[in-house]
Length: 493
Image (cartoon, rainbow, N blue to C red; front, side):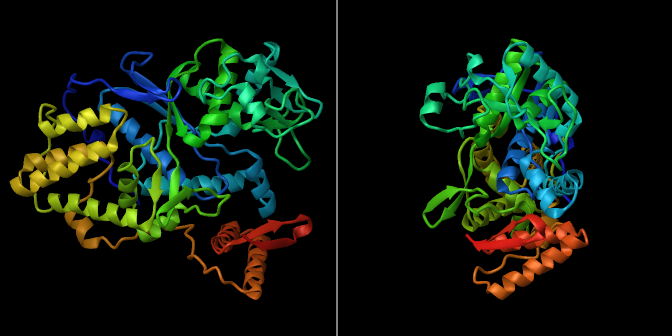
């Protein structure tokens, strides 16, 4: 059950030429007028999820932000090909599958299904393609072979194939980091098998019991960075328009993608790089980055227990995508009140159906905002001004315009009366939900009982239940460590 989708994203009618889309390009560190490689067409790739756990609010922000971007690009008349990948093989996935005593395929499919439910609940339109890394291993072998032939890759003494970072002259151009700064800051762990500590792995020699593919360098699996270079090229070509993702991927992931792809093909990889800001958790008047390592992250399904899915989407959209998103119940409550104001304005007024008249002052302001690097806070401000006008005019034309403009953001597509009458402030997904958060003061006996219940669930291969218990304990500040032989140890954070 997700949010209703507007027909053609709420847009019909001619596009005004008054403004031109500008995008903040991380590569140039400036807003630039957007000029597609092929007139009228846009190819866009966004780094998606590594599927070994439930999606958290940071993942939701990526999905919603680039969903809004592709909606506006399509509403602007572009033919868009939107690709968002799925990483279904990496160290974390293998570790979690081994802990659960299940295959990586079973683990990843379960969390892909959960991700799809979360995305649908938030009104995120499915991308045109969702490639899985494991489906593109032959192409990864081909690119690694080309890099080795061109002197950018070598097989190390431990069997891994690494990328020789210093061979690529442009390394650091996306992140602004120099090789000297990276060495001085000791940002990379020392690995005796590497020719240089900055080198990164392209092909990992398989360990016993791990999933593996045959290759010229022995049985193994691809490194994380090579996956996106190959999937993007396979679906969008060697040179495409927009590459997006979270700010945390700018370095090293996206920097390494550039190094791989441009070394392999000798030309520009991507024209415009977009990165959304971090989600931060408010603690009093202070905030800190949301992360699993700090134990302060919130899954989408936890949040949807307390708040309507459209409220969460509205909360994300109200912040400028490059800015930090400060998470707290206070901010979500405010978003709930704001969305209710907009729906209240629409209640009892029949919305006129028709194309958007871009000479209308509200529509023109909305367009200027969205063409200015997808400035959703200003676009939302236009919606509130238009709602105030609708409260006075009770005009079908104003109501239709409000719904059409909001539809380009994936908002206000439900029946206002249904929303206002049935709104209960929460939204619970039908399956795979968590049973609730535990208090931190668990006794030793309670913890060990839950660990025993988890072990029993794993024994009968009820991995959904075992994952739930692990998550509840983590919420209560209890970290589990599965040891060889089936023993599980625990510690308080």
